[in-house]
Image (cartoon, rainbow, N blue to C red):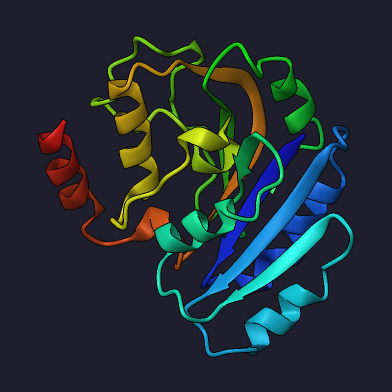
Length: 212
């Protein structure tokens, strides 16, 4: 069983695409937890997300939380299963994503996949595939955030701008094992408000790498 986390501040206009890509998975043993943060209590964003709630999908109004990392850490408290998958609301999964990754559960600590950009940019990033445990993570972030499955016990995000990259570096330092499936199973939307376009990210990366 896999717990899927979708934190939402911006991007509620993309929720139908992302949630449907979960519902349409050929792998059916999942729960989806959606956390709305940074809005007023019972906001319009929360009400839109709430429409998707059912016996497998739960929506939480974290109006008191102001950032993505704390939202993810709060969602972890509600996970019923030992494996966690991440999905940004503006991204989409291939219907076979979880099914393909499930064969690697128990073999590696962190399992990602290849991804493809769409929207304002349409390329395939050059990230390493197969066993990447010994890859030099300082060269680049080798894992697409919306592709990853990892153990719940390893989930804790620090409140920084590039919280995903920091987590991979920390887990690698703790001798965890990593694998990237070679198939393109995630489509990462590039748009004006996406993290891809965040100004100053290169400075955050430089600061982060200096710590490792």
